[in-house]
Image (cartoon, rainbow, N blue to C red; front, side, top):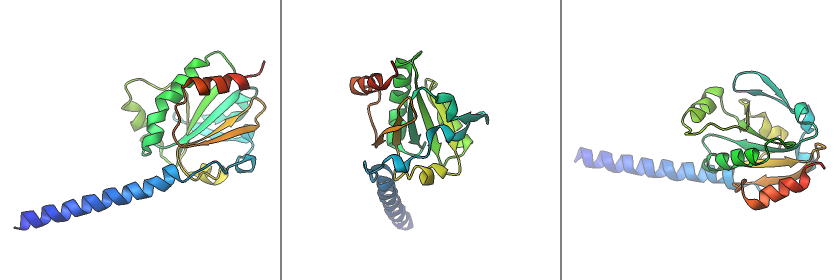
Length: 181
């Protein structure tokens, strides 16, 4: 009898915990919508973050490139699902002035490294860290994944909320249109 009651309690707790987790993650993942504008974005070339190896990465090195900045987290299923497509998008423009920079928002280096260690194929795109979660304030992020597309002049072109098929023909055409002549 005690085992049956315990199983029921554990089942209720797991059910409630899962439901709470789902409800909590929905706003983080789905709440954001396209109200963001240039005012929501700090000056691109003034941004600096750390890479996994601890080295600094300045966005000033991307001057003259079209840049797609993607904010993500290892605990965010849509973020994780779109990472391979972001990597393929980066590869499609190899040798051209285009970069995908993925910034892990609010996670510690060991969390991101653990995620990367589990991948079957390593990611080639630039991965940066924001362990303090400052991007939520600086970019006014309202959810994850959230991406910012910048022109080769550093101008914010578009804010994209939610999961995308980044390696689609539509996105490849969009990036191609923005590349400097």
